[in-house]
Image (cartoon, rainbow, N blue to C red):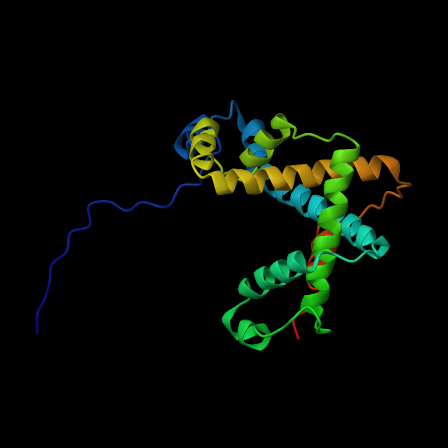
Amino acid sequence: TVQFETTIKTAEAPNILEFNNDFISHMGSQAADLNALKTELIQPQQDQLNNTLTQLTKMRVFEACGKKCTFEVPRVLFEGELKNLIQALPEKEYKKCKDLTIDDTHKLVKKAQHNLQVSLVIRQIMLDHKIELDTNRLKSYILSLKVPYVDDQIFLDWYLEQPERLEQAKAVVLEEQVVDFILSKANIVDETISKEQAEKAHKKEIESWPIQ
């Protein structure tokens, strides 16, 4: 049997954290006060919601455009788009779809056709109405992708290192500019929905082309 003698010198209870300027400094935030900090903490959630609504609107606009498309797309482009979609599939789905051709009736084939038709319509709208890339909007879009507490310029420099990333960002922004143009010419009915409803609707739109 072993016995130990212990001397307790002090006992402390946990302290309730105080939300003050010291707390702000400890977090590494540049917020001027607690109200500014609250806004800073909430902003990423608001940005995420705004992005969800933007994506939902874009998908519905493109869906409407696709329904109006009755023209045939060039076969070589059709085959290329279908190949890209197949290669992007998870391994299990890839094995099921790797031998698809544009003459099949699979939903992925329909999606390839839809993507191309909408892409051609978007390009034509850009040409007809001289829609050019908004560089300020591009910068805002890229910065919307950064995580909190990362310096804007550092993130921009890192993002622009890869030309592929930049081209993808340009494509997204140009699509959004075309969507804005289409909406400016359309009869729009505003609808108020909750964050949960927006996320559910967005998920439903994404799943509207299931892989079977």
